[in-house]
Length: 184
Image 1 (cartoon, rainbow, N blue to C red):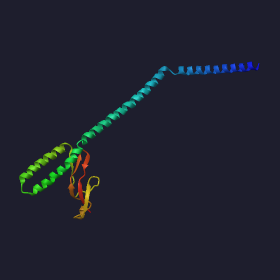
Image 2 (image 1 turned 90 degrees about the vertical axis):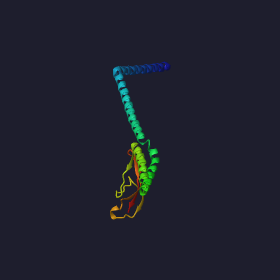
Image 3 (image 1 turned 180 degrees about the vertical axis):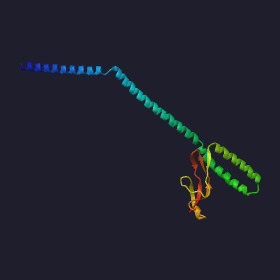
């Protein structure tokens, strides 16, 4: 008999468990029925729209960034060539200064024409000379001091006394700082 009582209890427990499971399934089905399929689809559409907007914004940022990089590249594409040509400009300036001292005006005018043509061509490609005058205030961000000498007068202390080498910009970027002598 004890075996029958145990079996009966097990059977009752199983029935109770089955009834609880059935109740849980019914409540799940009721919850599933409470979620309207239209609302579910609208939620999915909203998520997809958000993904699309993020992707679109990311792509627009990429386009802007690459366009800016391309413009910067075009502006400074000639930088290496210009940097190599700067010593030639310096040589023209030194040569013209020496020829001007001589009596040969025809030679000076010929070399001046060649120098001007060369400068104009480089200017058309974006090369600009940095204007520096004797007596300007020295600025470490814009000038390169190669030496300091005693100032010939009190008003030239801390100012540019001589320009040894001309500085140049290519677009907005300085490719060579002017080398100057300052007074102390």
